[in-house]
Length: 161
Image (cartoon, rainbow, N blue to C red; front, side, top):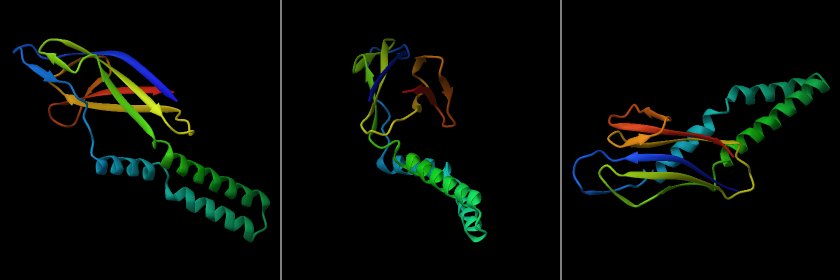
């Protein structure tokens, strides 16, 4: 699955000198990506639900209650599917940022387009992406917010594939 989203996000470099400035995306290291994906995977599934499924299944088996045992099994299977989905949904997903030009002079506009590629059979229902960029770069989009980091702004992109 390949989705291309061009938001016509124009960027105007601050006026001033006539020097060329490279426009490149912010690249994370492998350890930062791994930490972020682990935090996402572990934060979405509470251990209370797992204990609840085990207790319901055990009590249903102990008291020979088919509805309680079945409900515990259904909850356990649903938790397993949710955990596997959260673990594998972002694998083989690539996000490319394509710019209208590789270099720009001060005051010129550069268009950016996102290209999302899902190279696995597991579908992704929606994506929520935040791009960091220097605050001195003026972005012509309504989805711009301030970051908690100094001199950094965020460009927010959310879409359904």
